[in-house]
Image (cartoon, one colour):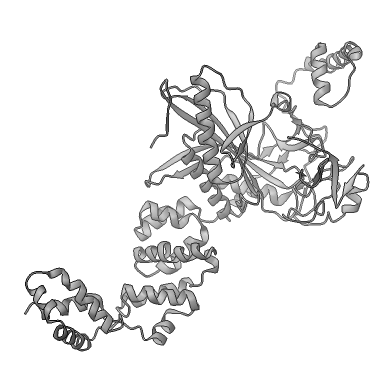
Length: 95
Length: 485
């Protein structure tokens, strides 16, 4: 699979990663290489194999509906670049 | 009754599908142990998971799974015993993970049905496409500072059920009925409180139009953020008109998300979803597939209450009510319960009249729910007994009811205290009649000369003389006898 520069630009925008124009070509080559390496998996015949989510027999753990977390505003805000009156404070988001 | 928009080039019909986000009733969040309660101070109900801190792992809340299955059963829908959580990726300040945990191609509930109760008593089946579990985002507050947006993550991770209808709705009215019916079912089931004002039930409407007779679906627009049934109906009406105008002036509709402005009654472009729409869903690697067995579903099924459709059918057959009256009574479970207590062993139609007009009138005027009614079902039932055994005329019963509303006293006490017993003793009424006839010779003469409508006036005089306690039917009968000799 080969990715063009326009696709790289779009994916970068969606992921909020800055990729300078000068690096688009090289990034495309690198990502295409990774994709074709992964694509080798499609050579395996999986006709009668059910989709699986892992190599082990793990089940999704469930929890009871009890309140045993929260009430830690100071800790939640500890790493916030800016906070005010218990809120995270961020640059104005205009819709 | 079809809803047609008359355009310049012809008739158009509107095609509507609704996506309802219903907050699941649970104590804690979908994937964390923080409280899901509404109205705490900023970021009070937030765990590290809800704040999207690195390394934190989500763990599914069993109550939310039960509630989703319960709702699916209530919608007569297919329950998927294996479903998958997926990440829906987009950036927004109030969504700290950078993705919403939702379900994509393998939801917990599949296709179902919701029955609309049309005002003329008819019903119409609307398809349910799916129901899936997902997390809510946090809240952005824009008006606390001129340069900053404040973020409160209390809602982040709150469990939601997204319930998607098929594009089966054909008018704003049907959309309104759909929302009311869905709310009613959710409240019966106890899976969502259905409060649109507080945001525990929110609705997005997908709207398109097409020429009458056409069966293809045209480009739709999604109207977001509509927070009342009435506004949903108004927004759809407006949006459908806009589509017709665009098509008839030779334009084309772009698929987009629009916001409804209830002040101006118009919709406007919210944002270009060209980019935002690329959500790059993929199975959440932090969560294994959600699986449960038949026994889990059967156990939930055994606890389902009688739902509105079944209750309505029973009210029609057991109490002889009209489809419309039965529909009104069953919309709220508490109303239905109250009615049954009043109607039990009594004239059901009389009970229906007293509950839906007299009692509902009082409740509406006082803006209180039926559970806080000043007159209990037992007391109203007793009042109906006093009508049935002729102690009270309808008129006296209404007076007694008003006093019961004001004082909270029971019917017997009111009747005794106010001496309200209807006079059925002919002697007492005769005496009053004789007096009135003697004092109004002119009116008697007019009556005998053919002005028979004066009977109403005579009856009024007798009622006045007996402080309203003469039995009206008896009173008329005796009057006629005396006047027509």
